[in-house]
Image (cartoon, rainbow, N blue to C red):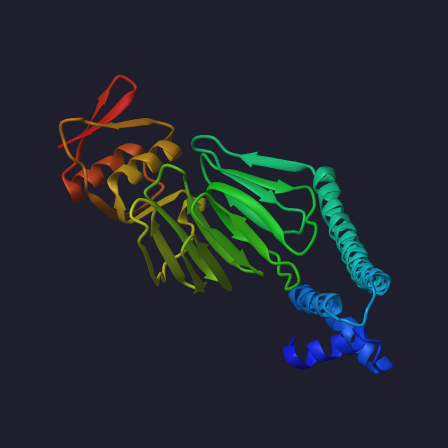
Length: 326
């Protein structure tokens, strides 16, 4: 209560049966507040003591006063219980309604999810595959890649899961963004042409935009790329570099290879995927070389010779394996 003295006087008048209807209403409202319980007990004790020490009252009168006081307290407590009960009912009703609404929404999405079938498109060593999604989006999967997508896109987004590399031509739809999820990042677009490379074992993953715009969401960063821009992400250090790339995107579709300061172990993994071979590194050497260069429809032997020329890393065949050494 804002003014304890004033409220005590009102309560005393109420107990003495001297009050207006408006005062009684205000007092009952204030007593519904649990914070005023101490005040009620204090005034009751004062009245009790005054009543007990009043010389002109008889024992019967004092008992009658006690009875009236108990009835008054019971009445007040009953009013508070009714008020709290009504509040509880109202809160419970609102909570039940909210549960019903959100539960219905969740159930709707759940049933849609359960009724949606998924397709897994994948490729093997040296294989490429063209895929058309339910919304008309077209893409090409590179070697040793997989794409998981629904039989139909529901809700407010079009989401697919990629492991490996793919070039996308996304059908434009402003009301339903297209999202590609990978192990290392997510890419969000409305309609554009772009390439994603995100193999699980590669040190460097990337996004290259040919036209339009994309948004790349990393665990602790977000960036936007426009046409002829790319981002290279180091999965080991977490570092990334955004830069302009004027050259053609996704040269691998035509059988080409392109390396730009690519760790030699990533180069070896890409050669394994493209040429269906097994490449190992001689254990007595340390390999930290970064390889740059472009090759158009070259044989594996030609590519290995180019690597030796630019880095000094040699190769030899041991059974079915190609061993790199210095």
